[in-house]
Image (cartoon, rainbow, N blue to C red; front, side):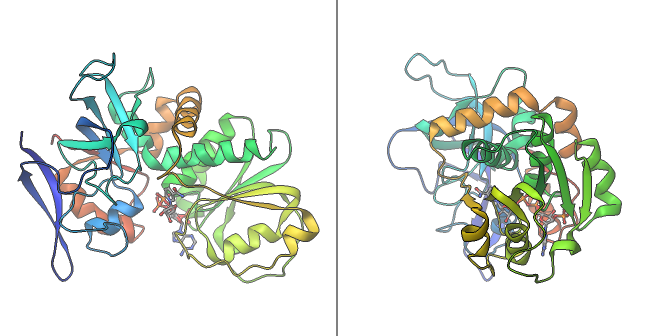
Length: 330
Ligand SMILES: NC(=O)c1ccc[n+]([C@@H]2O[C@H](COP(=O)([O-])OP(=O)(O)OC[C@H]3O[C@@H](n4cnc5c(N)ncnc54)[C@H](OP(=O)(O)O)[C@@H]3O)[C@@H](O)[C@H]2O)c1
């Protein structure tokens, strides 16, 4: 059955078009489940792919979209067709066709039921951003960080990953300090999401000493570069820094001092290839702690497939407030 999709095609630069396609261009190896997609979202990676940027789509033509929410098209092993399901990452919109389409094939072990209490729109609004924030929270927990242990810094807090990290960690009982380059616009919103303090991104943007005044029990970083190096240098003895992203830079201009003198742990977070038990734990955490009000505050905007292409440039230029949900049926 044919379906509508955003297709990024060869060109200089590659161009995204809405097309009706007879089937996927690239499919996952192994067992895959077919999902009738109702919602996706425009993540940072999707915005790069939609604007013809390099490094996301491994082959062209391909359908972008690292999030897909919808219903199972075919029943499988006691799971009926029509069950609401979601998938984040898993190579969608990178290695194989993604969620900005009426249908997608996803690796079977990455497809989860949409948690009770969440709508398809809610699940797409949370999407990879919220999923990654939850993986980061679980990473801190696995490394022994617990609420009541001191302040947790969230960098890039005005972005999707950062906003969900602030909201989730605050809901879990952590004392969260949000770092943003948009204090006047995003400061009050971040406090409404649960941040106890908001600091200007400039405070950690300039190069600093290898060890600085120790403040953070933990850090969730989606920025990379100098801010990540400074966050490491400001982390207390035994603290944990979860590195999630590179919105500022992929560089890490740090020294080993925080590791050998303060026993700081730098832990990686990868949403794309997360194993199923981590996926389930992350979505249980989100379903239990992120309210529809928080979702609405972080992801107020919904667009159709055509607008998703137009909105991508704004996402890359930092002109979009909050996450953008895509109704792929519109
Ligand atoms: N590890 C994973 O599996 C995973 C999953 C999802 C995303 N990511 C990565 O995480 C990062 C954030 O993703 P997102 O969806 O949250 O993106 P986003 O919504 O665009 O947010 C990125 C935020 O980073 C901050 N920022 C942007 N440019 C900066 C700069 N030059 N210096 C310092 N801060 C800057 C801004 O925060 P303020 O406005 O608050 O300053 C911006 O809102 C991206 O690099 C993305 O690829 C990784």
